[in-house]
Length: 202
Length: 241
View (cartoon, each protein chain N blue to C red):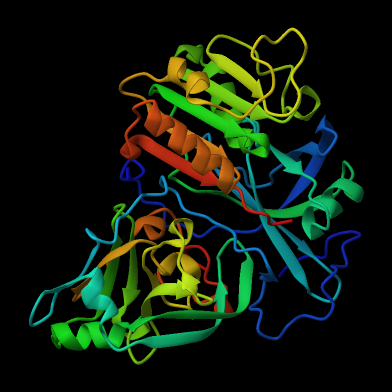
């Protein structure tokens, strides 16, 4: 389907098998991409809530969420703008732990992750359960900086990184899919990097 | 955060082979490529295209580039590309591509960082970040609505200023960070709140485009000038080669 571009041979002959199609290794760079002003969030006023189709809507303060059992992700992340970062470490709490505390109702099929800035992104419930998603506050052993979503962000590393909402404030459980910010703006509803699900229709 | 006019855009974006009509230098490291689209779709000022290069063995590399030209019905668009050292795509575009070549593109993409053409706005661009803002300025001037826009462009030096001949006009200010022409009383220096404050009006949207460091600095200066976060839209250009 793709036609060969005259005179282009590409430089990256030894492609790391961890790179999905169309991605390149950003190595030491960690590009910063978000559409709103980078917010200033104080941890003494920070909260995180699980709401919607749950038995008990539950809100954690900064100290409370950090007292939950810790969980680590070691692996790669992939941004739809074509960079990937390989071999990262994130520390935080598994979304499974948060959902268990709130009690997911059987009717729930999807979640909308919301941020303290108003940003939203939608995910099938199955993409944030069974050890596939976290709320994280440390990256490579250091506190997550504000431009990367600190004090805490969602981490869903098997999907393109816009699903990993920065400055996450809430997971809302729904019985239907509800497109989030980028998804309403033409991006794919699921965003699997191995299937190159970048835009609607991919 | 403002959402983009409630617009839904869920059509499939198809790849198409755009023909390179002409190439011109903007600065020593930036070039503008005028492309003819076989399946044109009118863009909005601020949108971008993804450009894809394919090697004979099927290897591909793609990057996003903002449209610099105003929306029109010519079926042609202009993309301005900064050459990044070691940039696999930008170096190919600068070194190999000639008029007559075909390059695969798809777009236009993005409904958030767009100016609809009928609302007062302040545009703040740093370096190559001026590209999508230029589409907005060109649209405003063509429609006789330059009064709607205030523009602040930050560039390292006059030689490194994109669209240097075209930028000057009412409501447009260029500041230089490293070297300024001798006749500029401001001199060279980083953008300050004093540079921005005269351009701030009530009831105006703000579009900031540039590197992450520039975008965050501009946001901070605008906060100091009293601009609320909710009217600010940011496009951060990453190092994407």
